[in-house]
Image 1 (cartoon, rainbow, N blue to C red):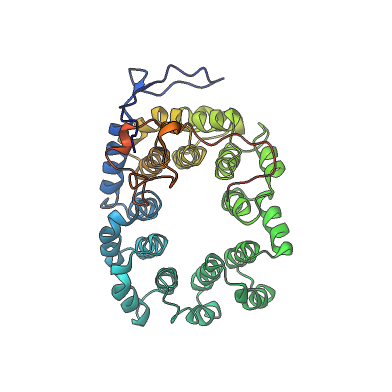
Image 2 (image 1 turned 90 degrees about the vertical axis):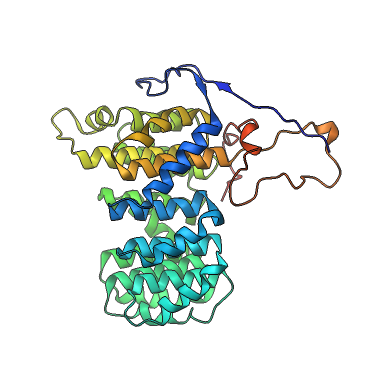
Length: 387
């Protein structure tokens, strides 16, 4: 079957974004192959960063963007000195179903000294690989005296999507007083289809506390895809900047992202201070942590929107000194490049459909990177949602 083999170099001119400052390269041309290599390199370097939070973000991003090709690295991170890095590594091993790590994951579950959060993640990972022997332990952790353990167990039970978890989760919700654990339970029940919990989650997303809103917005779009009107309302200028960016990313996840969403996210990564100042007023004191958070959200959301034009805005972030932003930018680029679809001559396709050159779950091959980039999801105005 003959396929089109061509190296594609897209010339991206300066985008006329309202109120945005261009933060791209000197040339309008973007080398997608080099962008992929640079993003992958930055992400793998972040996995060994001295900052534990950077390593943690990297473990999550590796699982989402590099697949089983980095399973060994994720398995090694199960021995990281930081508990959250170990947790993220175990979760990613489950997401990619990396079977060689089964033995080490089981050791963590059986070791009484293992942090409950890591135990939950290891149970999830084995469950994803078809080993359900330890799933029952989540119920015990759900009733433990450790709030972070209870919250993690609730989250994992939601991710497993087992309807039988609804009973224990509802029972705990009636007695639970810790706000973080209650949120985890509500999110889990929402994902399991509980309508009351979906309404509560919606109230979190619209609530007063910013940190809670930022966690609730993506959770809301995962639990209930019919949230377009709610998310569109959060894109308005009267909403906090980070809420607007999170909502834009959620719209992208649902396949509903448009130019307005894209512009909001580009502003977040190219001019975060100005965006924050416009959102909170000139008198508001902008903290470095606020800038970092907004930039990171912007990079993640650009990846969710899947527009190839975003690469030019994300690449400069790979070379900054903010590890969390570097990881988010790398993941965004890898998501966009990883969405490459092989371009074929329709007249020469065989009846069996896509052949062996198709992309696998470990990301694009060298040959795939020389093919045209998919220009993001089709814009939809109603109904058919992505996930």
